[in-house]
Amino acid sequence: MAASKADQCYEILRQGIMEGTFAPGHRLVIDKLVREYGISSVPWRESLRRLEAEGWVDIVRNAGAVVKTFDTDSWEQTMQLLARLEGYATALSARRLNRDDLDRARALNREMGRALEGFDPTRFGLLNREFHQLLCSRCEDVRLSTLVADEWTRLELIRRSAFWYAPGRALASLAEHDGLIDLIEGGADPEVIETAARRHELNTVMAIHEHERQLAQEDAAAGSR
Image (tube, rainbow, N blue to C red; front, side, top):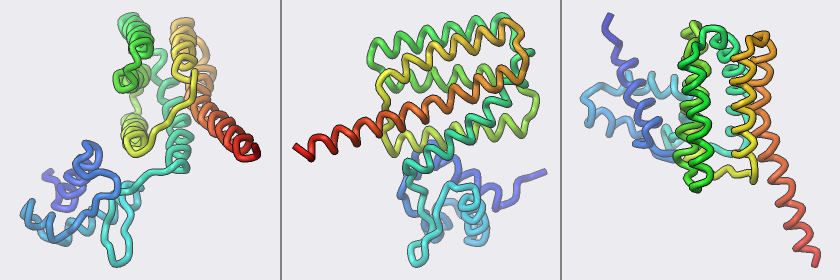
């Protein structure tokens, strides 16, 4: 069945947002989209309402649709949701992961360590996403897998529009990755795996909050001198 015009418009806009063609803060002008793609205005309006409902754009009065600019709250909400979705997907996938999958996961984790030693955060991030995708790759719930992928995309957009850093967190995450692989290799109960995978994501949230708290204390101390 052929996709509707509204679906086509939705995919064009969503892909453009994901790839950075439409960056955070970019105005999506319907008249311009009509001219560029040769699709009438009604499907574009429908697709923008859908993107607004999904949290990708804001429709601002007298300004039109604007690609959402993400902030700390958006980042934390995404991390909280991703922790729950990915924890469940990893648990469902775990018993179907084979020896090659687990060997690849360990190899990816070692590559992440080398990227960290080489001060290459971009490569570290790409490998990290590949590692997490691999642990979820045997999940047979297609809807759940789609939701996980969507939240990872949202997370990467947030990271492109803001810089997140907590000293020592990247190194700690590598040890947690090894721990997850150990649980899967050892045939741990799915609930144990789900909890560990969820905690792994939430540990990043806690690390960021702790780092921000320390910075605030340092700023306060400097201001009182």
